[in-house]
Image (tube, rainbow, N blue to C red; front, side, top):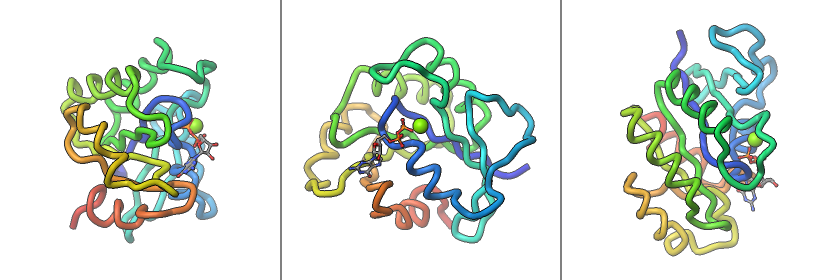
Length: 162
Ligand code: GDP
Ligand code: MG
């Protein structure tokens, strides 16, 4: 089994953008993997020379505002099957109640995780990450998924330590 990395967070934080960036090599999409559901999207990725299985969540949630019960259930399932959880928050929208809900799910799961603060393009990331310390999950890792900024450093130093 490949190491499984799940991308979780409330709608619109950039999970799919990061997923697509990391899995855009051909044949990445996986059609048959144990536990595959239409709620989550699976693709393999070669991350720093290591083959991983990436999981995108939030595919069928109709709720683009907060976190609904279905989303929470789906995220919990994704966290459960993950070896590592990438929890994404949004530097532009700021800290929300939904972020705290995810932080609680994560804490209860006891899984290794990395907290990622996305959409830092054009912002002073040293300032914008500050409010997310309140989640109690340590220092947020600033990235811009749509531009690729800091994504390689994230993989090197946070997600896939030597
Ligand atoms: P998801 O709902 O968490 O999967 O979020 P998406 O990946 O669909 O992204 C939601 C929106 O945020 C889209 O309009 C993206 O283009 C935008 N977005 C994603 N990453 C970034 C980023 O790094 N910077 C900015 N400015 N926008 C981003
Ligand atoms: Mg998405």
